[in-house]
Image (cartoon, rainbow, N blue to C red):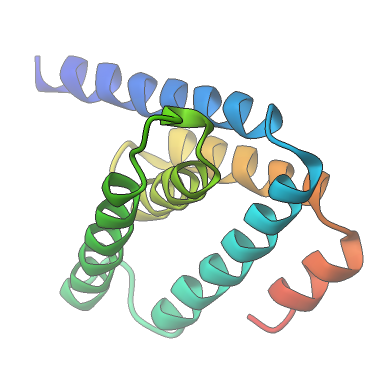
Length: 138
């Protein structure tokens, strides 16, 4: 029974991410680049904070919960009349989806799929050189 709810929530989380990515693709090219660049840097920062920590662990849980809380607050603060067309909202929503994926709360398969979708979007919206410069230092 509880597995069914987890499965439904995981499908919903992935579906919300896919919807956010579609909204992101509708933004102006310059907005997409800026969002991708800022998300990549923030993702690298988040992963650096977890580097070397045992997984799973209480310390990782505390850090991820703190990161999620911060990003969820940013997403809620970015709600305007533009709705999901607001670049700031899109950025925060994508970061939130990344952290949900990183947490593994919905299992490895869905987590990997969510992270892959975000990484693919980043690669599509920034140069390989910029992408590598950010992620190679992790």
